[in-house]
Image (cartoon, rainbow, N blue to C red; front, side, top):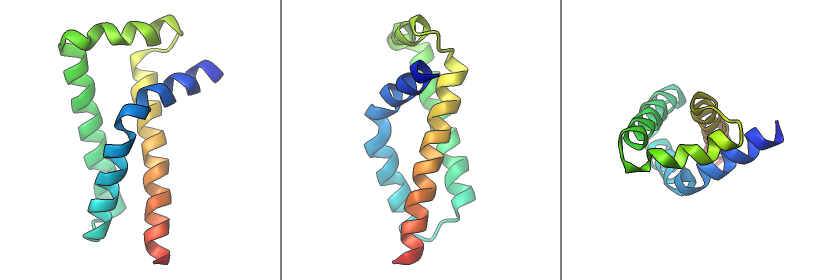
Length: 95
């Protein structure tokens, strides 16, 4: 389990800044949280597709060596991103 969490954080780190900015941008326009979740799911699946079909496909070997499957990585990243979006949403409620 610690390897899985570490792998998810390592995978999420490069996209975290962009994801947080997207959340803040969409929440500033009062977009419902459900729509943000759907949009982020679509963007994450698109990023996975691009990674899987490009020369960066070998980057997944690092995670496979840790024993993490691609679906675990994508799902874990989505759940982490959703949790962070909920935190940002709750901050926007109090402002």
